[in-house]
Image (cartoon, rainbow over the protein chains, first blue to last red):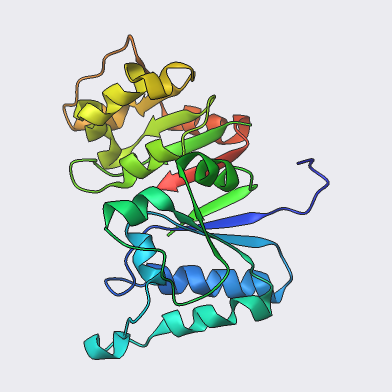
Length: 123
Length: 102
């Protein structure tokens, strides 16, 4: 990781999807970076893992469902999507996500991947 | 390749600090700021000193002295460095990356 290399961005999602705008803000930043072909990786930890669960419907609680936009990640070349395995286990969740190409990582791998990026933004 | 972790929330209220501990690297620096100062009283901080998981790591713990004093949080100076906001600015340059847990 030299200074000459292209800077990489990690976006760490740690909030559940519908209580505030953190998840939507993180999504907007990810898509902006993707639009400009900047390397961006998404990480989901803590309550952030709820953003990836199947079968959610924000319209039932009067929230525009930004989670459907996650399906667009591949068009923006966002292919590095990582989930903390411990966070899933703590919430008794199985690895059934509403998008594909999600990688579940154990604590050590998750930490290594996250800190291999130049910049980390946490939402 | 060290990471500076800026912890701004109390572990008594959120799991931010616990999530921080999950991604801690060998040479990392943790700075407690704002309500993060309350973590000095939280049992999870002992994980860093005593726990075998962390025993092979050399984690530096620091706290903004003014923020801890304002909250009447006692600082064990044997394990925690007291720093100022100016020191925090320097730390952002000395480390490879910053993660703010807020």
